[in-house]
Each structure stands twice: as C-alpha cells, then as structure tokens.
Image 1 (cartoon, rainbow, N blue to C red):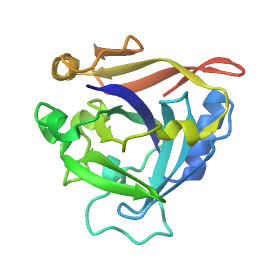
Image 2 (image 1 turned 90 degrees about the vertical axis):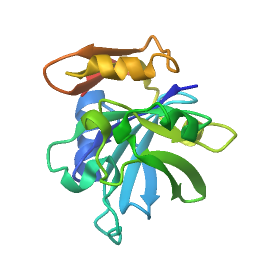
Image 3 (image 1 turned 60 degrees about the vertical axis):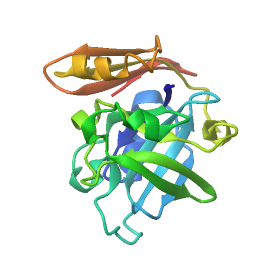
Image 4 (image 1 turned 90 degrees about the horizontal axis):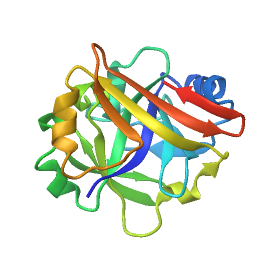
Length: 205
C-alpha cells in the first residue's frame, strides 16, 4: 500500500538549496511552485515517472500561515540537507491508523491546479526528525513526477539512519517493500541518497 514517492531537501532559501544540489549532483534544479497554505515554495526534479527530488524553503514573499509550517521549516536554520522522505499511498487515512503517532493528520494542500493530501503534525514537526516518512496521497491519474523537469537523474538507493530504526522498520514492514531503501540503526539521524547522474553516481545528503 506504500511506495517511495519523493525525497526532500530542506533549505533556508531555494537559492541555497539549488546550490547544494548543484554542488552534489552537478545539475540545476528545475522550477517548482508555491504552497499558499504553508507559505513555502519548492524546486522539483524528476527521478523517473513516479519519483522525484524536492528542494523546499520558506517563501519570504508569501503571507505567513496561521499554523506552523510543514517539514518543521519554522525551526530550520542550517545548511541545506536531505532531511526526509515521502511515501505515497492510495488511502492515507487508513495508513495513518498504524503510522508513527507523530505523523499528524491528512491535510489538503494545493500547488497551482494540483491538489493532494499529506500527513502534517499540528506542530509542523516531522516524526523522528524526518527519519520516519511523511505520507502523501495524490489524486488518481499520472504521477506528478512525469510533468517535472528531467535532467537524467535516477535514484539508486536511499539510506535512512536513526537510533530508532527498528521502530521505523516495524511500522513500515507490512505495507512497504522497496529494495532501494535501507533503514539502519545509527547514533544520529541521517539520510543519504545515491543517485545516477549524467556525470556518474553521486551521493546527496
């Protein structure tokens, strides 16, 4: 019932995030859009027909939302980093019944004409600092990644490290199977993605 949907880099600004991806992968991030409900904007890179890389930051030109922003962006003030991953589902309400209790609730978000449901905690924080995935339910039809800019990059694997790796694996074991994703125990939370690029294999973290 769950599939790898996208990986997300947090940044203080889109310019900083784009520079991080350029330095790491050697590619320019294509344009994304704005999320009025959250006061954020993003850049979006297709990693295939149903998978993508997102860079997201606070949109300083947008009105601040009346609630905490998603991805804990209100408290983010570091260098750009691959901070979380997102799993897609056709029934987010059902999946949330057994998801990590800090996953929050299904919230409707729009970007342009596109509308979807995504799990967001009322505090804006991510479960297990982002090591436990956010959940998303797109509308029926072709995946949005197919309409994003494609620079010839493809995900080889994603490694998720966290002290509570067993908790993550246990909650996802029934509904998520993907040989590209490895969840393992470590002293600190860290995500890293090995990506095939036109210039060879690179690691984004």
